[in-house]
Image 1: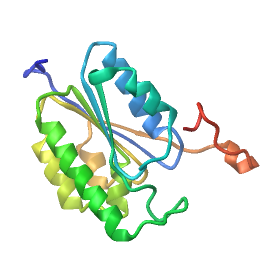
Image 2: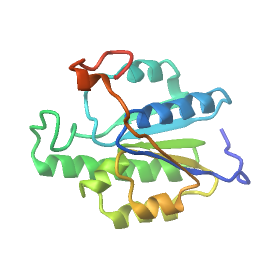
Image 3: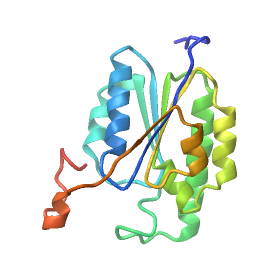
Image 4: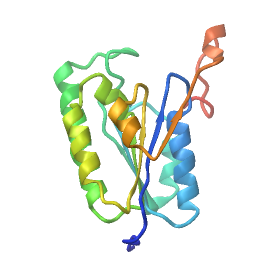
Length: 181
């Protein structure tokens, strides 16, 4: 597939403390797939947890690539991995993201939880800046995760902040398959 060279790719950021950042990115991907775009999702942080979206993405075949690169949630959610394992996974994910962005094979690339990887300093700010500077102008990039860096918010074409108002967890209701993962 040849991506139109004259198309202006957007930088989109979904951030905030509320739920729904990855879900919003997946909604964007679903819309793009409706136009026969090629989509690549590189997940930082999340690791090997089972999510319903992984099953859905597999149904799109080679039109939607998923790369689960993280070593799991970092410093939360039963994290039992040494820091060097997380750092190595983040570097590998960053290298893959760079490769996918520059490959010319994708219309939309999603860097899921990249903001968290930057906020926790698994990824250096200079490395994120390098990726943004090298992103081809015709490729759309979505970056998700809490605590988006200020410079990313400044550079982005679209920023949406998810704000938690109410969550079932506050009432002791555990995460539900099909809704939360």
